[in-house]
Length: 205
Image: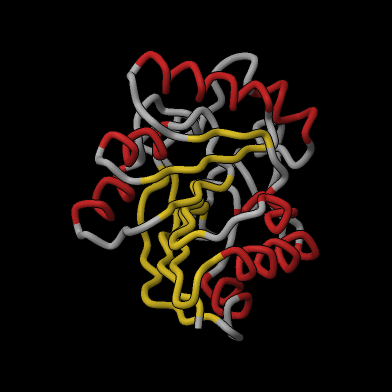
């Protein structure tokens, strides 16, 4: 398993996430990622949307402001508390809950769309398989999953595990249809100008 890590690596355990959110983690840029802004402009979102690993909620709140029904979850209770605060301050309607993304079937609901900004690349191989199965179970027929992750094109030190195009294609080779897989920039404060990433659009088959 290829895994590039450092003291700045994205956390994998709840205690690590809580420590990151005591300040401002490098992936929390105080606004939505541009790829999700563009996604909304392209009218590719609909129905009930689940933001997995929502952090402090910037992507979810951007879409809530646009009138979408948003449900955000994160393993960090600190991040969820901050998301709630932002939601109240901006007078928006969205639901945020501390929850494990590896136990999505315990949410008790189904979603038309799932968004993921920087969660997929945090998983180990075993966790990734569990997550994809859980995701499949909570999406409606032909539901969509859009995710942004670090790519193996990023050669600078620091940050989470890098993900290859081949890994993505292999992970979603069964029961899913990859609609697009494009190189992009994962905006963050870890690297000047952001980091090399992939933005992936997938549909439940």
